[in-house]
Image 1 (spheres, rainbow, N blue to C red):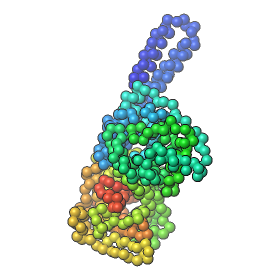
Image 2 (image 1 turned 135 degrees about the vertical axis):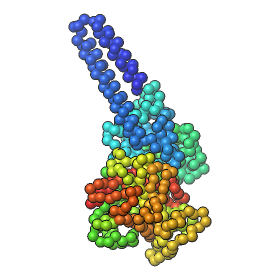
Image 3 (image 1 turned 60 degrees about the vertical axis):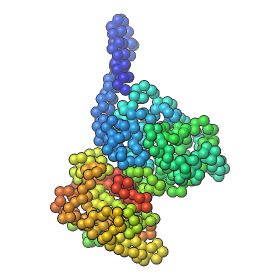
Image 4 (image 1 turned 180 degrees about the vertical axis):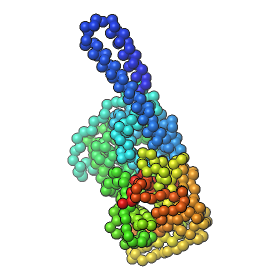
Length: 506
């Protein structure tokens, strides 16, 4: 972009010099040059905006994963799988242009706006304005020389979709086998075949093969036109080829077959404005997850993304909150068919609520992955290791209830805690700090029943510790959520996380 701007300025100056040699009566030429000057000034103004605001947005939101140099080696990248994109290469998976060509500006905009399902890349549509996303997309282009040397190709057309019927699905199944899609995605699209987990992307990073039966894991969209576009453009930098050589009807048959594999119906939409609230009650707060105080309390659906890709991630979390004049409580609920506690092994089901200590605005908030330097977070953490209750699905009678003071060998629990919850502070990856025993004001309880965990956190609204989050009806609070699935061997940074949400006390 700076190279093109230099050429344009040179052309304008040369035109002005030529203008001095022509008669004054040449008004048409004069107007042309004036227009060129205006366009040049507009271009310089856009470059200045990109350099200042676009860069500021990148440094605020993108550096933890993609790094200051855009090489995909931010501080958080070590913990992420798939790895963040190396923007220096100018190779992007999601585009509407032909394979191995640059994406359109609109393609970059959509990727930033919608995020990438199944990864830690969140959607920024409800955080950044349309103008900010465009400026960020323009700044991202400055990391690769390709954008100053090449132009994006034309947008690949998507034809009219034929009827979705049994014949189309049957033909699509045959095409799926003929193209040997099962070598990577599995014979039934379940991603568990011999090449899964062993194939590499451009640059040597391992590629994760996603379950084609899950529409929520289609990164470029699961609607018919979206899958069609992915097939004809490919996913550049990955082993996924482009199939633009196939006949139109064959492509649509393959699309319909893939959609026929969907075994999860699209869930109801999650928060669109990232605002939740705590409801006022007069009753005393009861820690029991099935307490009647939660009846009639509004529920908020929170979207979760895995830090490291896995099969069947937990993607939805239901959150409720109540408070009285003394205490505040949160109830988290999520589906988990297999409960994992300390009595079962070293991988525990866990959950956490994270609060930004000094920011109440998402735009100024810390990195949602456990904060950042000078922007600490307060974390309420629960583990299924002490006094959790597990109920049978059949008769709903207690199956086991236990207090584990001596966990199995190799399992590290806090030796000073006899509670399943604890308060932690952090200023980024690797900086977790457990609060002293005298500052542990948090109470909590977990219960598993009918394939669902219900966990309640409760704490006094006002506490003496400066490392505790402060609640007030006058000031909103930033909070995010995390889950660990013991059955998936989650531990430490390997978990599902949400982006920031805004809590107000109603």
